[in-house]
Amino acid sequence: MGGPEEYADHPVRSYVMTDGRAHPSRNTIRPETLLVADPDKPVPLSASHRQRALLDVCGGVLSLAEAAAYLRLPVSLVVVLASDLVDSEHLSIRCGAPRHDLPERHVIEKVLNGLREL
Amino acid sequence: MVWLLSGAVVTAVAALAASVAAWVAERDERRHQAELARLEQQHRHLETLSDARYAALRHVVEQQLPALSQDAAVPPLPEAVADDAATELVGRSTAVLDDVRTGQLNKQTAVEEAVVALGRKVQSSAHRIQEEGARMVQRHPSDPDVLHTSMRVDHAAAQQARQAQTLAALCGEWPGQQWHQPLPLEDVVRAAAGRITAYQRIEVSGDSGMAVVPRTVEPLIHLVAELLANATQSSPPSTQVLVAARRVQRGAVIEIDDCGVGLDDNRLEQARRIASGRRPVGLAELGEIPQTGLPVVGSYVRRHDFRVDLTESVYGGLRAIVLVPGDQTETVAPTGRAAPGGPTLTQRPETRSPRAEGTPERSEAVTASRKDRADPRDDHKSPQGSEESPKLPQRRSRRNEAPPTTPVRWPQEHEATQTPEQAGQWMGSFLSAGGSRGTPGDGSARPSADTHDASEER
Image 1 (tube, each protein chain N blue to C red):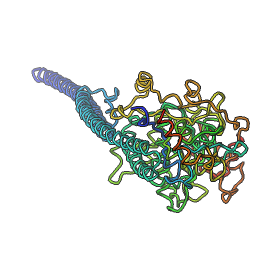
Image 2: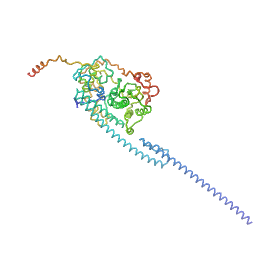
Image 3: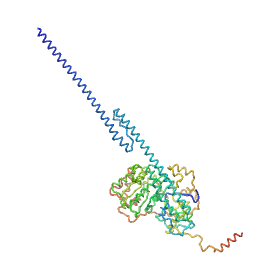
């Protein structure tokens, strides 16, 4: 039962970690979103061990999915935890490749067609 | 001459008759005396016998039968009763009563075993439900609705598992699950909160820097869960239940305050006797409307050398205090810092084996099987574990260099109804009561929110 089916149990249940919330406070965080902790901001005293751990693993830039893997928590749960920390400005979202830097659609199509002709 | 002679004869005969009569009288007297002495002796003997048999009867009625009804060993007849017949009869009564008691015990054991086995089944099915819920969330990693459903299912199953585990605890059995990593005190409280209905009313404060050793994790979680359940049930739904965990010289303390109306002195004393383990309550004593919470607490207290006391809380309700002895606690690195060499991860008690849940787990057996399986999940379970095989690139947190100071958060409005010294005195009397379960609620030293500060000084 490895891979995504792997079941990691923990005495502290998910609903306790989020106070019963399953929906994140913001919908901008996705599994591939890069997160980075603000090193200058002290860890909130009310933070649970999981939140502190999340801040720890995000000491460098880390995608949310990776952080979830580190913490061995479901991605959807980490989204909720991370959203709270982003709200409190302990975590910030590091944008990936900015959308306006992406090439236009017709350029990509040309490249694709070129590759097919090889 | 003839009359003279006959006179002498008459005299002699008379004298003879007199002496014969005297002899006969004396002989009868002696006989009577002997008879009297014999009768007296017999009387004394019978009296002794009667006393002995009365004593034997009293022993049966006053000692043996009550012992039987109280489920204690039937005491044999004391040596002092020296009557063979009584000894023999009481000996037979002792043997019969012993048989009855053995039969009772066997029956009780059989009932308890059945209850424990049924409880384990319910518990393991609850754990399977939790496992399925977790898998469902993993299969739908970005669907909050699935997470929400899973949380609700998980919460219901966690409460079911606790109730089932209660049955085992009341029968003096081990809890049905074991954890294999130490767990910080605050997480013990959070884990316990997850097993009660009103978990959202639990407010944990403090960062004690203390964890409990693996073998203590599950019993303590269950114990705290029962205290939290009592606290939430006996206080208005709109109020919080405040929990503080802190390090003390003799180990670690968890305090649970509710804002209910408390108990009157009589009921408080009864509750204290049960919660402190002084009065064991088994399945049979639960009654028609079973109150299982405090009996479970008491059973863990007796088994694990915890100390639990209940007092009035400054918030008006009850305060439950749990002392975990020092040999069952260990310090943990303050949270919010990365361990050198790798990302700090939470202290994750290892997952229990879902396949082994149906049977009562003994920690040694489970540990062994864990090692055999060489579970890859062990890798990131603890800061220590993270050194072994970090799978991801190591990132070091700069938090490392700035350990957070963690003054304990405590609601402002509860401040100073008494001085920290008074509170400290009270705390001291609880902690220094030694082997005897202390009575901290006496005198002027009432518990206060300020024990927080006071105990830090000790």
